[in-house]
Length: 306
Image (cartoon, rainbow, N blue to C red; front, top):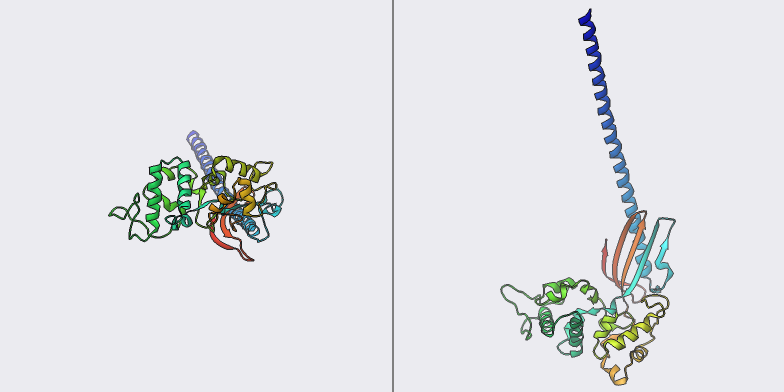
């Protein structure tokens, strides 16, 4: 019968469409399931690689902390296979300006105030801006019984901490700090962890230029000699000064000029800034440490992981 034949064809077409629709749903479900499994596998891989990279970065740190390891020790860099390894660097923290050490006695030791003044001037601050910032930092760390001429006493809207700086970033809270902290990289010139006096073996040319009585020409010659033929710090051809007398000689200072710097500069401060990067595949982990390498056991004063 014609009507029955048409009905059968229509039913068959509907069943085919339902079957295709079911197949499409099944394919989509399988695709989502496979994608979910792949994401889980990748997450596990990333987690395992991250743990491996973290362990490798720690290996670099602990090797760098060994009392016999120096900046030139080959074991600071190691690779294991094609895609695993670590690389650690040691830099002298004593080459930076220890802000708390300078400020604590800046009123009594005018060399320390002059060192800060010279640095801020080279950062582009005017004489008046330097005076405001230095006096404000002194007000920040001192008890608050009196305040300095260009400083910032406590008010209803501004409060000094009346303690030493806990972090370098706290400087940005001090009145008059804007012209300094608005510049990139200023934090890299300061520390709170060294023993105090500027380490001539580790200090940058900028810091050496700021030391009272040295200036540009002496600092340039000194750093060039210290770096050796490759003109780079912390490499195998660096000249290691045996004592301050030798260092003063290469700075071109006579005995009376050298005497003026006693207690303001040093050599071989045992405080080091260590950065270790570990990698496993395409995953990297970094550890940043500041430690004092004195005696058999290092004193770790700062540890941060990235």
